[in-house]
Every structure is written in structure tokens, then in C-alpha cells.
Length: 614
Image (cartoon, rainbow, N blue to C red; front, side, top):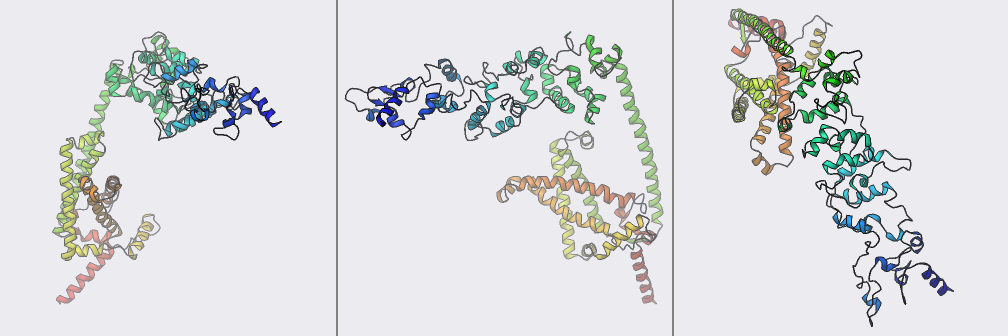
């Protein structure tokens, strides 16, 4: 009975060569390279015999033992699909995938048509392509491309069967997958709009009529195609926000290289940015016009083209989409050209006149107020000469302070000139070459480092600087003074804080100065000699040193402007200036009002000295 069933099975399934050779003897359920006969019976290949694909497998010369010559008797060594699928095989030979075998993508051919295949399910297409293209170890493996696609509207948007609306094969083709530089490729620049047009017919037709498509056909590599604006893999819904749209257009129309190469109107970018439309969009307006509101999204044409939405004859209709009941004069007043000298010479000279007026008026005000302020400074300094004063800084400290002042601001200017090379302000303040900037910065750095080292040595060997250091150490009294100062400033008390010779303000400044200078020296030396630093420092250190150097400089500059300058210039008690930085002295009257505890100490010392003399 068992033999009868096996014979019946072999008659029903063409898995035989004829004669006494039966494939299932070896390739049955439990054999080597087993074949699922039940599924094969239902597959699209069920009417084929083994040798239709495995050509030569049945060839045995007289006297040869089949088991000894098989599988070496296979002519092509691998199954042949050419006889039935000649067109597809020929396409594959031209493809970038020509080294792949049919079953690398289609899977087990014995079950084709039984299990879902890539020809029926786009999800399987994506999974199949990802096997190689999501593996960075393989040629053209790029995880980002696959991840981008997985986040795109093509993948996330599903049809009624739960399949992606567009799979890899829909854009790249299935068998004749060609490189993007191949003119026959579906993703070749000149073919992309037609490829996208398989689904987006209306948009493709509009784009093909545009000046952008014309540029692509003429071979201009920079002329945008669908994938330039929409991204080739991470294709998102067209619901860009208006600022993104405008910035996308301006990325080309403000590019000096493209403007020069293709003779584009350089004024397009700055005139649009100078308009209410762009300024309102930057503030988040959803109603103001982006580039596509006037020029359309895909059918973008030259203004000279009668069909263009920005042709003079069509401007009223284009502007009328937002502005109702308008006339031609209104429409012509808001073009790019109307903001240029050639388009509106009256506006150009009015603008120019106002620029000169602002410079003259505001410049005159600044000059006037500077002269007034300088007069107050000079009178205050003269009056101060007649007042009783006490030494606050010795000559040595005064020289170090001057060196620090000059070197610090030289470093700030030359450092920020490098960091902000496009800043108009920096160009005005420091209009010199990089060579001059670099060496000026280094010389200033040497001066600051020297001042720091001298001060440190004076602390070690000298009494004056050591006293300064000890007086700058914070203590419980500083916390008390902060509370008193805040209470007094908030009008919670009329009692002025009991400040001594050194306040918490100076202590914070001094300690920040010492720490900041040390940090800037160490990071600065690293950036000055990175080759040497790389010999013994970890790989991450140089970049970290660059980051610390910049942000420490930013912190120090802002601290000087908003903290130090307030207390030595703008504080009501010292305005218009604390002159201690010039002569190292402070008036006794100022001490009495601003540093009452120190004044009390001075009086006690004076009384003690008088008693001693008596």
C-alpha cells in the first residue's frame, strides 16, 4: 500500500526525470534540501518538471552512477528562469542587481503563488529590499535611507489592503533597477517627474510645464526636481509650513553661485525678506504669502511666460486670492522689482535719504551725549582731586589691571572677529586680515598670561597681592551683605548694607577672573598647538577645549559688561565713573557712603594713630 501511494504521488507531481530517478528520493520531506510537495502542487510552477529549471540534472552517461555525478551534472549549476521569464531576466542583466539570483528576491520558487510574494504585497517588497539596503556592511547598505522611507508618507499611508501606497519597486522598478546616473533609470533626474507622475499625475503635468523642468531637460544639475523639494526617501505630506517653503526656495535663489551661474535675479531673496509677507511668516502667520502662493507650487514659470501666475497680465488674479477688490496698481506695487532701484527709483532714494538721516541724527545725538558725559567725567575727576582719598590699589596692581584690561578686550575683539566672520559690526571694529587677527590675538594672550603669572608670583613672594587674595575669600558676612543689599534695594529697609573694603561684588569678580583666566590659558594653548596637545591628550579634548574657550569667553565678556561695568560706571554711587582704575585711589566721602564698615575701620585706625602720637 505504501509503495502504491508513493507511485501515485510521483504521477501527480512532475518531480521526476523519467526512468528510475526520482527527485523526492533525496529532496523529499526528510531529505537534503527538502521540497514541500503539497505547496508545490498549488504553486504557479506546478506544471513544471525539475529539469525545466534545473537543466541537466537528469543527464547521466552510460555506465555512470547518478548519485556520483549529481549535482555536478547540472549544466548551469543554478536553476534557469530564462525559458519562461526571458524579458525579466534580460532586464535583470542590465540592472545594478545583476549579481543577484531570482530567488534572492522572490524567495522559494517551489511555493510561488501559494505564500504571499513580493508581486502581491508591497510590505514584502520593503522587507526584501531592506535585507540588503538596511545592512551597512553590504554594498549600498544605508540604514538612514531605509529609516527615512519608513517615516515617509509613502510607507506610513496605507491602501485599503494595508499596504504602503508606494514601495521601493514603484519608484526604482522591479527588475531593471538602474543607477540614478543612468539616463534610462526611473530615478534619473530627467525621468523623476514621470516616475512620480505614475501616482501624482496632476502635479507631474504641472511640473513638466515649469521653468524648473525646462532646466532639468537642458541638463542643469541644480534645477530642482520632485525629490529636491520633497526628499527622495523621507517624502512627507505637502503640508510644509510657509517658512519652510520660503527657506527652501531661497536656498537656491539666494545662493550666489547659482545666481551667477544661471543669471538669476539676485534681488529676489532680499526683496522678499524685506516684505511684509516674509516678516509675517517668520512671526508664525499662516495667512501671509509664501513663494508658492504667488508663483504656484509646481507650474512655476518665468514672469515673461503669458501662462505664469506672476506675469503682469495675471498679477491681479494672483494677488486677488488674498486681497479682494484690488486693481493693477496695487498688484504692481508688491512685486520683487518694486523694491529695487530699477523698479521704483523714488522708493530707492527715499530709503537712501532715511539711512543718511538716521546716521546723521542718531550719530549727532551720540556725539552730543558723549560730549556731555565726558564733561561730567572731567568735572568729577577735577573735583575728586581736591577730596581726601585713600589708596585702594598699589602701583603694581594698577599696572596689572591695565594690562588685563587691554589684553582682555583685544582678545574679545579678535576672538569674536573669527567666530562671527559675517558680522558687519565685527568688520567695522576689526577690518584686518586673518593673519593680522591671529597674531594680534596671540600677542594679547601672551600679555594676559604674563599678567596672570606675575600676579601669582606676587601672591607667593609679596605682601600686597597676598592681602588682596586673602581679602577676596568669601565668608558668612558676604551672605549677610547680599541679604542686606537686596532688602535695601527693594525698599524693605532704609538701612544701607554694612559693606567693608571688599564687597561680595568684588569677590565674585576676582574669583571668576582667576578661574576664567586659568581656563582660557589652558584651552588657548591647546588650540594654539593642537598637534602637540594631541600627542598626550585624549581624542575628545581638543574639540572640548574649543567649546570651553568660546563659551568661557562669551561668559566673561557678558559678565564684564553687565556686572563689572555697572558697578564701576553706571552705579549711582560712582557715576559717571569709578576713577580708581586710573590712580588707584578712592575718596573718603565715597567710602563713607558706599563702604560704611571700612569707613568705620579707617576712623578707628586714625583715632588709634592720634592717641599713639599724643
